[in-house]
Image 1 (cartoon, rainbow, N blue to C red):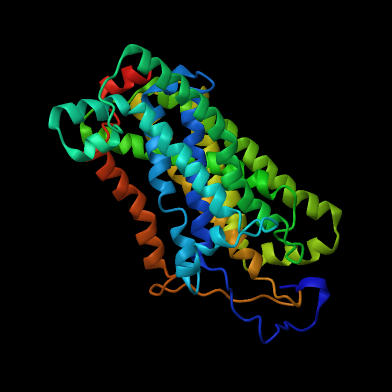
Image 2 (cartoon, rainbow, N blue to C red):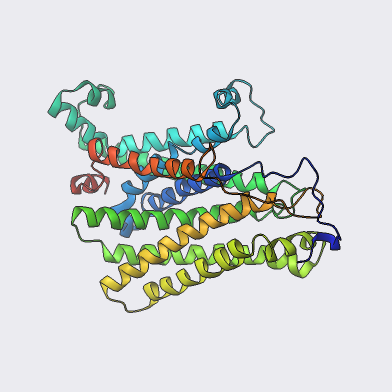
Length: 390
């Protein structure tokens, strides 16, 4: 295997033998991507009036909120002293993209929480009157009177917040790509396309995860899926993924045809440590198979059962594809030694603060939270709530 810059010795500096940003740094942009992608689906209904997505508009908001509650947890587990995380609010550094995360994240979660509260305020008032419980009265802020005028105002404010949430969601996830893209010392990261790639892949992962959760919930409830809605959703997924795939190909293609210094580093990286995860995994099987499946769903004449199976398989593969992409970016960029003359080895660990077990636990927490929220607090798929939203 060739080495960067035609070096003869696979030399790695003594202080550069470990990958410092590990699996939690991979998981963090994956979760924030799911937040932005799920919100995008909700905005298609609330802002762009795509009526086909009415059945999952509020569902997408709640899913985005549940994932948002744990967006910062991977970073806290990665930090050496997580108790100092709140210092970013008390000693802000406005010139640092990393320090701005706290303000961006907090603002977006407040916006998302208010939007969900407006959508389900009628339900909270109903529960407060029905149970006379303190918890439900607190959720109503003491206002138990709900009129048609109140409903119209809530609906109008929801649309406004959804419109404001679109740039907020894009900034929340796009700035992660911005951080990677501005690291000029790492050839695999240094590209102005990085924020765009992160945003596009975020929408892909969000739509894919929504479809997987929606079909599972409908199966558990014994209810019939909305097949026209699923088909339209898969059409959007295919369109966004084609854009995402084209941008990712153009990024590597530009470096290849330029044949500059960057390619002397990126080329051996892709043909070496990242060959399986990037070439075969991310850009190969996990991209081409979903394209074929979604093509049949969008343009083929499949039966309802075949369409659902193809949609579920394609969504699962695309969720994995985006996860592979996060790994290849976050971990892959650190595999090139700072000497540019060799590669650093990355070893998976099962236990530990950033091990596979910790990643699995953090990944499961949003789903557990959604279960409790939908089971005890918000009737996400209640027909009365859908009528209220419309």
